[in-house]
Image 1 (spheres, rainbow, N blue to C red):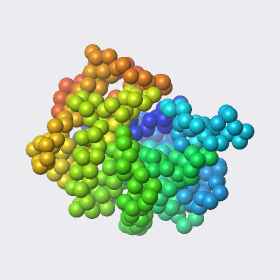
Image 2 (cartoon, helix red, strand yellow):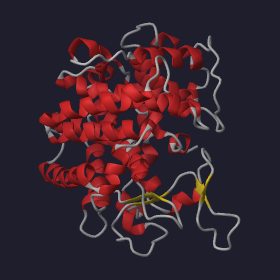
Image 3 (spheres, rainbow, N blue to C red):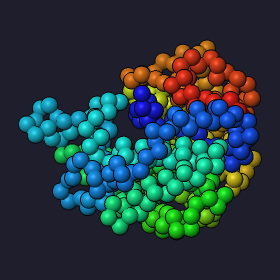
Image 4 (cartoon, rainbow, N blue to C red):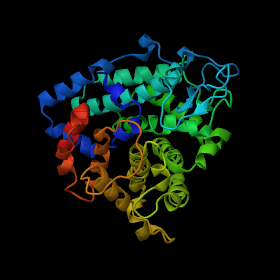
Length: 388
C-alpha cells in the first residue's frame, strides 16, 4: 500500500517536530540496515512534480472566475445535493470526505508537504544530497515557476460548490500540512543546506504569502475561527515568523494563542469543540497538537506554553499537560473510556506524536509505545522514536 494513502485523511496527526539535536541523536544511533529500510520505504516518493505534472495549473477541474495559478480545493465534507438537478448547492456530511476533492489541488499540496517532510529527515540521517535536489525541484515547480507556480494565496481553498469560491477555513490545507514541511526547510536553512537561488525564491514567495496571511479577508476569517482552525492559523503563522526571522512578531502571536485559543478552547483537561466532531479522536489529538507544536517553536523565543504562570503577566490557569494526560489515559492506556463519536477508522499510529510530546514531561510515555499493537503501518516513525 502507498504510505501516503494511510495518512492522507489526517496527515497532521502523523507529523513530529524533531529538533536538530534530536535528528543528530537519531543519526548517531540508527543502524545502516535500518536507514536502508527507511530509505526503501520512501523510495516511491523520489519523484519529480514536473515529470508527474502535479501543479495548480494541472488540476482536473477549473472554475470560472478563478486564476488558473490559484490554489483551489473543495470543502472536504461537502457533497452534491441529492435534492437538486445540478447537485448545487453542495451540502455537509461532517466527517465524510468527498473524493471529488482529489480533482482539485488539495492532495497534491498535502503530498508535497508529506514528501518534503520525510525527505528532509532522510537527508539529515543519510546526508544524501539527492533528497535536497528533489525538494528544491519540487518546490520550485509547484510554488515558484513562472508558468506552473502557485500564487501566494489561499483565496479559493475549501470552496463550497454553489455557495462560494473559497473560505477562510480552507487555510487548514496549508497550515496543518505545509507548515510541517516548512519547519523542516527551516532546519535545512539553519544548517546552510539549501542553495542560495532556491532560498531566495522561497523567501520571496513566503514574504508575499505572509502579507496575504496577515491582511486578506479570507485569512482574517480564519484568524478568528474557533476550534482547531484558529489554533492552526496561529501555528502556521508561527512557522512563517520563525522562517522569515520576524522575531518581533512572535510575542503578539503568543498572546493571541493564549487569549483567543487556549483560554476559550481548553476546559480543564479537554477541548470540548473538538469532541463535538464526528471524528472526535482525530480532532482531539489535532487540537492539542497544534498548541504544543506551537509551543515547541515559541519556546525558542522564551515563550513556553507549559510554563505560562512563570512569565505571563495575566492569570492563565491552563495546563496543557492535563489535556495530553487525559487523551493518553483514554487512547493509549485505555484506563478511561473515550465516550465521543469517531465515525471513521482510527489509526493508533497517530498517537505517536502525543507519546513523543508527553515523554518530554513524563519520561515513561515512550516506553508504552509497545502497547500500541498496530504500529507497523507507520513503522518508520516508530523506529525513529525508539532512538530518542
